[in-house]
Length: 312
Image (cartoon, rainbow, N blue to C red):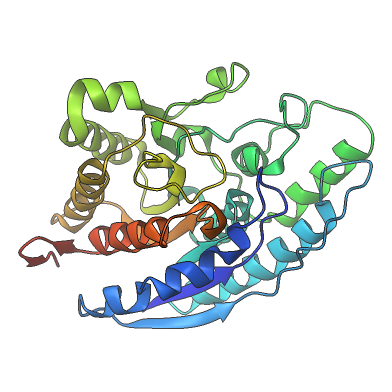
């Protein structure tokens, strides 16, 4: 059973508006797209999220962030306990700390993370130029210290204390399609980092094969995919908060999803897909809901849709 969970929260991003993303993706037909593949789908609705600004001395909008992380994490834990595969509709990318940490608690050390994004999102409060927490989720998940003192450090520790269970292993984290990486982040990419340069130079087929081989060597048994729509070129997906030119084309994105599905479905594949984030769709900057439509089409490819039918 695939369970759709909406998380309409956007205070920790660069631009407001991605709180409307879950509604836009639903209107683009995500449930129908998955059910047309013969999959069982339930829509669990949206978790409660407060989007009233709350700026204090520490992390920006920390209290509303903590509230939504707690409830979303609990919801994902419940979904995983039922054997479901949750698809979390964001909202901005900070929300990934809830789903990924729930999967880590459920599956333990055998879980790997694939971060498909223009950005590495592994800044800490001490290295972030913007101070926006949506650039820090991987630093929180891997247990990195804040690098600062005072109220910000207290709140950073509180955030990490909520993420119970094992920490995300840096060597079990892969990035795909990154192209805007801050200098302080570069030495922190301890797993597999596949940049747009790598994709341009070697192609999607070779880079996804590299990803599959890396996952197999890592010993991973469970895979969570966190997909930020800014991985796509903004010409195709303008409705996002942190657009960076030079991203995945339509065909590259779909081939990537199809090849990941093929790898997972191969006999003897040691890892399985346990959850997906689909985040940063921002209708306020979109054109005719094209970004949400692209997100739905990408998810359908990830779950088996092909030109001649579907891959099961």
